[in-house]
Length: 110
Length: 114
Image (cartoon, rainbow over all chains, first blue to last red; front, side, top):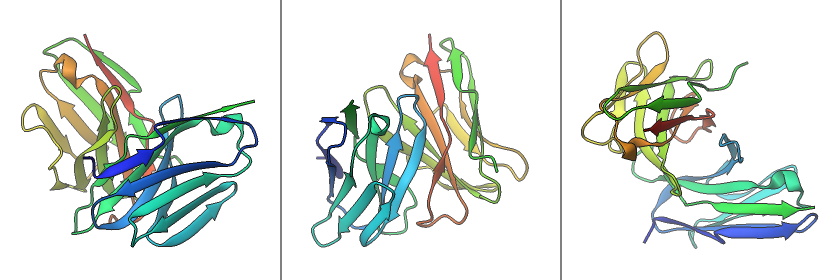
């Protein structure tokens, strides 16, 4: 079993819909990252959080440390949101490396 | 204010050749991380470096792969005697202080071994 699991693997939505992508992890963490990878391949860091909730524009990320679960929400989705969204965790214990989920491929149709 | 710069964007090598991938971190960043994304797989950590030091290379294959981050110049990921299984996208990220500071990623180098 992977240390970081994302669901769904693929998600298709209509423009304007509210999107939720989930991430569960099985290890102790010091932080959780949400990343966006566009079809061209570049990776952008969206959020880094260790507790609570963060918001940036139409994107909201939440984390529940006790349940080892995080969600990424996109409000009023748009075709330009189409990308792969990746959850990654910094494992507690001094290691600097990230452990990644396999990503959720989001397609938003006009 | 340039972001993390990786070059080349695309690299084609024949089996047995050497591949050298370069990463210039953001200005002021002294922590560099290399990750590999194999086709149809997720990203995997390879190595974490600070200037002139390898901090964690637990994700590096034991043979043929090496990394450096010299006092001057970019970080280099070097793959000797490449094989087809090395074909992947290699991403570099940098941060100012390590720990849990936000990461900034480069656009990656796509290595194809023919």
